Length: 136
Image (cartoon, rainbow, N blue to C red; front, side, top):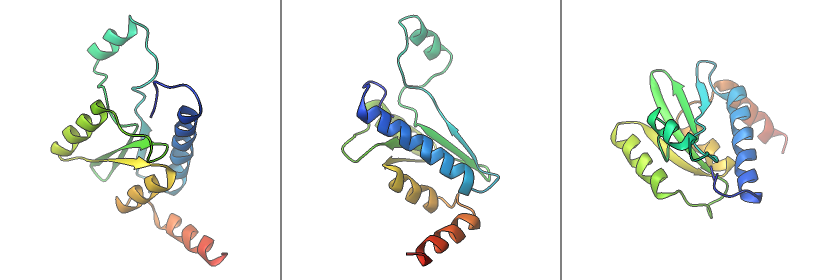
């Protein structure tokens, strides 16, 4: 998420991530663990070095998904106008080279499509989607 800027873009990404996590808690498999990785945000000059020494990794994706012994990671951007930082691209490459799925989503809908492709939604979500389409 954008953490360097305070304003509309940061709030938009924050709101999208909250909505995405809530959606996943409802529609992902009950055995899927969805969690945030709060690496961003302001850190005081004293906190930064301490957190780095404790293992905080620059550029780590916003969200993690654990299911059936597989870990997947998602970096969420508010729109396709928001680009990942070099540290985020480098971490994505590192995670992929280590054998993990790691993708960047540009907005809520794109994130949903990625999570769906990963097979993390239960049949309950598919039934809900069919119901919504039939009401259109």
